[in-house]
Length: 434
Image (cartoon, rainbow, N blue to C red; front, side, top):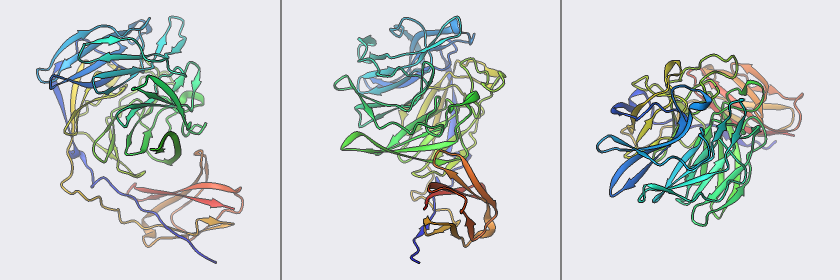
């Protein structure tokens, strides 16, 4: 028999620890407490400004959802009011992206007195140099809210999955800011592992990463998946989707990017409605006080920030350069709507070379018939091995390490194997059962 040795390894984030983030509470406060607000940055005459659009006020009621917009002069830490977002009624769960002199505020949803909700098809355009809105861009093909949003090639805004009116969608909608046109990308798989609302992500190079969010089904449970999309740079609508099962599922976290990392700041480990009450039991939800980082692989490092002030209910952050970001508003403990502003700076470790963690695990022949053969030179450090279907359903598992797993009762197809080590790190790979 011919064997193919597949060696699983992963890169850690330079042994990231609590000192990797420096989080500072700014003296300035927002003009009012706001949560679920779209946030981004802009530069005017060499000065950095922080922008916030729409959101919900401290009442956390449907009629506290508004269209108010503000900007902060970061140098002087002073605020001023901007024209209201040009829409018919207040909305939440929009996202903002800055390209050049224009800020694009995309989607969001309205809440009515009778409890019904409606997703927005608007893309508002704010010109930084004019300090005002211009005519909306072309309508979003599928109205959307609580979506994943990022900029690609300093021109295209990707809108991935999210919620529309009455359900999750797999759509990938791509806005060409140069031509004011939309195109549809290859959708994410139509299952609970990929379709979420309240997830967040970014792109490094030509690879999309998005994490967490609330999946379909009863109570909209957190979705512990890191999804990856490989964009064809010669045809930006072509995307190949894969995923890894992970131990983190932040909901409404701010996703930011440094040179080679993607980070998720704040959010909650539980899913909840716009008022901060859980979908599962209608009780208040706490922030998770986490910073989570990924470095080119599925391995995530859970960091404990040096302050417990990281809020939840975030729709973005402002990138002010030098691996520093501003977060304004959100929800704190006891679902208190915040008027605070945080400065979070990522402190790069002194080393510039990632270190592979030392655990060993190999698949012997990743195309198998009845038995999956395994090898490890650190078997005592393995807690358990699990097998999942590609849509995230648990199939079977074993506690501790064995050299052979019997798969005779499994149907043909591709599967994910997940190896958990006793220091809480894990590895994943895929195999095919004939």
